[in-house]
Amino acid sequence: MDKLKKKITTAFKLSGYVIRSENATYLAEQLLPFEASEHDKWLTTVIENIQNLKITSTNIDRVVIDKAIGEINRVGLQEHETIFDVIDAFQAPRFVYNTQSKKFEYDKKPRSVLADPEMQVGYLEQRYNMLYQKTIRHELFSPSIIEKTSGQEVKKFKLLNVENLLASTELKECVVLGQLNQIEEGKMFLEDLTGYVRVDLTSTRYHAGFFCEGSFVLAEGSYENKVFKVEGMGFPPAEPATSSRAFFGTANSWGGKSEKLLKYSVALQEAERTNTDATMVFLSDVHLDDAEVLKKLKKLFIGYDSCPPVCIVLMGPFSTKANNFFQLVPLFKQLAEAASGCDQLKKETDLILVPHPRDPIEMDIFPRHGIPPPLCSDLLKAWPRTKLVSNPCRLQYCTQQILVFRMDLMARMARNAIHFPENKDIDNHFARTLICQGHLTPFARFINPILWDYDTSMWLYPLPDLVVIGDSCQSFSITQHGCTILNTGSFPKSGFSFKMYIPATKTIEDSEIPDGFPEDNVAPASSSEEEEAEEENVLDQQVVEEDVEQLAESEVVDIEDSEIPNVSPMENLEEDTEIQPDPYDELPSVSGLKKHQIPGALTEEEEAQIRMVQELELDSDSD
Image 1: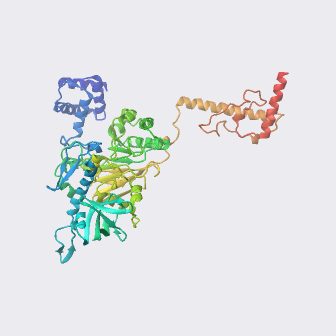
Image 2: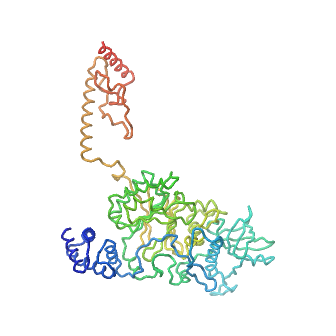
Image 3: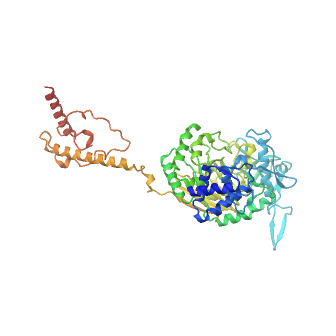
């Protein structure tokens, strides 16, 4: 190490730089894993990268060294291209559909949690326009009514607005795109940008999916007597991401540091294909106040220390009992302690914490801000690559787009559905609902409040490659229209199972933390403590044997040897049991036995006889 440090200091001096001893030590630690013959080559590369950084000072600190090493890992990538990035929901860009140019345009207006009043309906207008533009392009909706294709007649439909119905007395075969709302109690209405109309759902045939109040639907039926009698109801058609991106141009609709979308980067595609060892780990319901969960997390960290994944995503709730955020501080400290000793993991892996609506951080509204850094100060010191992100959040790995959302969506959909699917394949209904709605929470605002200015961060349009839902129901994975919907399930309820995603092959593996590791038991004692404990056990055993012999030979109490088991005094005591002092411990005894030394060995009658002898001995001493 000293020889390498001296070589580093000399090389930097020859290049006109000054590096302090601790920084030279840090760089030496980075070079040590390589062969000694390669040290000169890598040291030269680091210095060249520092020269390319165009720094103004000749003093080289650790930040500059990290940047230089980072440039080595970015061989072949442009300046704006990143292998992995975490995007907060409040940093995700907002694109608005321009009805004139038929394109999505980047909205540069400043956003706020306290949005302008017009955004109360504005965010619903933006969502409606997004669904309308992809629906009107579908092959079923075109200007012609009948089109002949290969000798077959394909029926087309004309998409109407609500105002078209209200302006007529009677219409047949109407198809309307609108939002289901209960404007009057007990009566359902279909609403779009032009108005609303009452709907009759008594004889409606429902297609696949969960139809909830607040969902956008395609309703087919007839209009008469100011009532739209719906015969069939479905969702807006799904659209592959490749088709959707054409209306965004080259703009980065996903978010991140790059101004251009990284989906088509050749260098990132090659990096994604060749890095077959890259993995991503997802867990939900990580209750840090559960001792068993912490044990399993420690196992997880130790297991991945030798082969660190790209990231480990932990989703809340992080406490089952906390009702204020100060109670989370010791829990995150315990999480930091669980990762102690896993230096390689903490060096190469991003730990991502996604809060649950029940975590006492802020009001129950989406998107939710991440956990405040002061609550995780111990964790951030122990694991500097910890990311405290929003719920939901976006991940970018090479060219892949991944969205993470923690919410019990399945139960909420089932609870608020106006019609429960007859088909028992609930997982497919769930996935189809999200993909067709293009939104994570397709509910009315009173069911699931939304921050108006940040509703677009909840969009699933264009469709990402992977949507990770941290739902407590049974885990599943379904792929539709090139988008995979993955539910991780509950970490403690599923026998401590979790999901591992392999980006190179776009595959998902079910994983489980087995029992039987040493971490399941009490931590082993030190060698000195073990020797002391062993000596105490030997002495206790000798005392017991002597007492048994004396008791057996006593003329006062006649007890057979077989009635007194040869056991350790502490064998039947639990670890947390506190031994109360015996009132007869300080009294002289014929046999020298103490009551708690052989638990359960004497009957009540025998104990009474011993006590009588002890009292007689006291009386004789006093005389």
